[in-house]
Amino acid sequence: MDPATKKSVPPSRTHGFKLDLLFILDLTGSQQPYIDSVKSSINTICAEILGSDHLNSAHPGDLRVAFIGFRDHYPQEDSFVTRQWDFVSDIARIHANLRSLPGADGGGDGPEASTAALARALTMGWRNDCNKVAVLVSDAPPHGIGSQGDYWPNGVPGVPDPLDLAREMLQKKITLHFVACEPSLSRFHNALDFYRGLTRITAGIVVPLLDARVMSTCIIGSALESLAIQDLVNEYRETLEELVPSREPSLVVKYLHALMRVRGRTADQLIMENIYAMSDDRKENVEIWSSARNLAEAKARLRVSL
Image 1 (cartoon, helix red, strand yellow):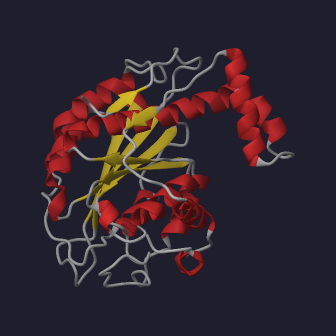
Image 2 (cartoon, rainbow, N blue to C red):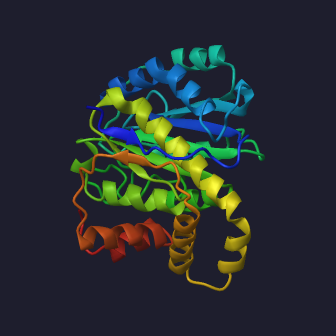
């Protein structure tokens, strides 16, 4: 049985969205099954998103797809740090870009150059008049978060702080989701809590993935969840503009949930098997990662390394 399902919901009340979808793919040695899964399912991914209630589009240009591949920094890796293929909408060009992705290879100390990939993501040719979603796929943490065996325990010199990058993504209205390739990711100290905090900054989610064969479901579901949130923002924009300046965010969320129930509104939501046990310490650590000014402050405040 597929562990990932999408909740059945009424059609969207706002149509005609456009979407720029960026895949940020770990291309180190352990990742070949996930790379192959993206390559084999890209037609399904594009068709499902274009046919969703939120895009409801017969125009391929309403969905554009880009790729960033990353490995690691020298001397841990001597091939490349990041490579990118910018946004295109033609499915033949998307396939051509996928064919030119290097195979999984290399990687050195455990943590990889995902922060450099996030920095590269901010330079891509995003459109201003569309929804922007980035999906990071990896089984490794970035450098500098306190994971074991890190060649750069304080971060790679010259590479921006990933928390700053996430806040810049938020400013540019880019939602970052993270597909956690398990069980490898959870073996690294702080990795899961860090990615939960990082994606929270951009209103994204962490999706656990135990089987590369359901990669397409994870990507489709996370993209549609982002579109559903934008759908709700559009519908309740006036209410949000009234409430946000004068209320605590938690109260605003509770009010909107109540209003949605009264109006019979629901939203697309990706439902995944919950494989994580979230203790109070872990929840506190996620909050620390999402609110800290930088990695150094976050690590100093962590309740316990998990």
